Length: 206
Image (cartoon, rainbow, N blue to C red; front, side, top):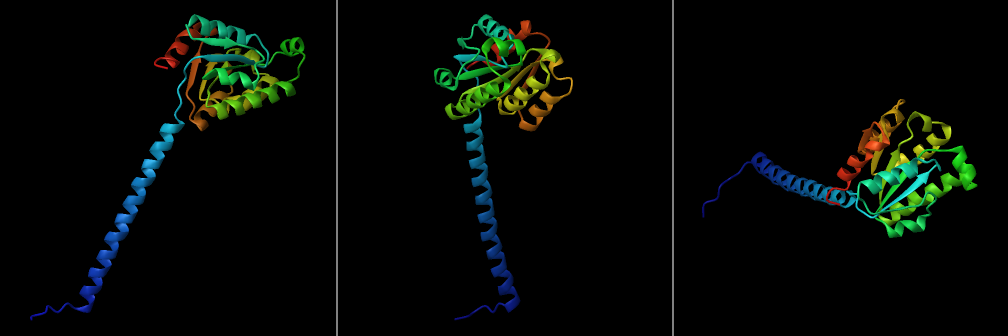
């Protein structure tokens, strides 16, 4: 029976080619597997605003009251509680945090900035646990960019799924920076009176 002689160097190249094909197959399989996992995680993480909504004040200014009026005009089902606690989030799918500190509001409510920060932290933790969609709104403009308000902004904005601000709220670029670093959608309006349309667009199909 005739046999074909293959030089040692040729046999070695053949084996190396076979090993290379196996390694390539494993690499491609792992890559596509990771891509599939990433796609699944992305789809799971993607949230959308849907009613009903809880509107609450973060800072006890009247901005929360103005926001709830806009939500009402937009025809979105909602509850309004300026001092809502975390247990309220089980009744809704979306939470609106109207951020802006008011010393008068703190005084009327009998609380301090420390109390408000604590309540806000609990709301954010509960929202994450419950899967609530978080919208942070800053409608007070430059007037609500004092040191107290900034503490509340720094706590809430990075954890939002969506940001809506008045155009004079971001002279220092804080909101723009948070939105960029966290890949958070940011809508800028000129006045709270014009909040209705962005809200309707946010909830379209929700």
